[in-house]
Length: 443
Image 1 (cartoon, rainbow, N blue to C red):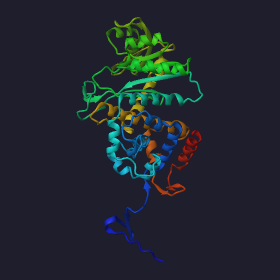
Image 2 (image 1 turned 60 degrees about the vertical axis):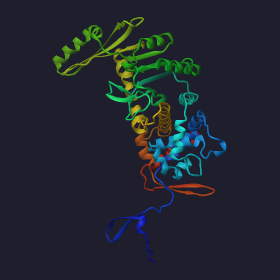
Image 3 (image 1 turned 90 degrees about the horizontal axis):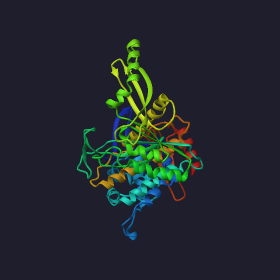
Image 4 (image 1 turned 135 degrees about the vertical axis):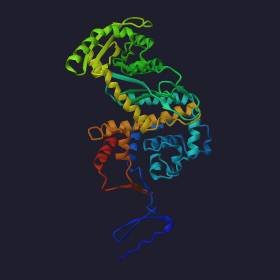
């Protein structure tokens, strides 16, 4: 029997015909979400309980009898939204009706509206933010389980967060040639330990020693014998920082800005590289070391030089360290590895919208950075635990989102079960199955 499909013109979109057949799209598909793969995020959260812990850090001034959306629901809604690619509060005007978001936030009703979420952001205080930072750091410690690490390399780096309004803490930064904030990030491998928003009218190393001190104290409480190495560029090479590390059994390997005295001390190595380059017409790298002390330092320290000479000219680089080992190995294998941290910062800024600091007041902007950091922790947990050994084991968060989260799903919500029907032609279903199994086993 022939079935005629009648689609009202007001609810349909007509496209070019397929042969003699009409091609018509309508909006009557029922409960369909474009984020069917977000179930992986839900299982990662169940394993970490990150949303619940962060929500417990916040104070709620609302009258309990008038509350429709509790704090865990709203915090989860924002974190999941960021992880799924929805950076703006305005996105939640429509997203709040998505059954997947309701499933993620454990609510069977419409999720929170943008104004409600905005009030939550603007109600945050310093104590709450401090407690949230502690939760992120403790999550890092718990990720080791019963394993006792022998060495932890803590990467410190600052970046620019360009702003376009008249936000509190707005200053012009000469190096970046923009009005911006200057957030500080600390990573250990791919794991995020700290995301700290700062105004830009400060030295890049501001508060680094205090943050490092708190981290070292807690890490040594947990693992007294762990070896801690601090790694950073020349913006973190400050004499008080190195002096503190020497006194507290902390190793460091830091970039050192070149000056005339350093160039003089490195001259035997740079001259040799220049001579060899002139003979071979190829770039030459020679590594050496010497003792050096700037005027503000309390003592001489070991400086490693990379005397590089190219056809176009010399390119010397210096690092200062209290680590033992071969100069070349220290520079190439240990110091240069800090460049991987810049990829993690790009994930924060570009993939998880940590630079969406458009609130007028400073503390709500710090809160947004913390929400982005929490979204990163969830996604990195999926990458390290659920995707290990797969072709997405080293994928960026944007790739994970595109490949595994952004899959259409028809959602059937009944009294006894919630069924998500995903596309049978989805090319990533095998990886999805494996990731889901690993996350379920980790709960």
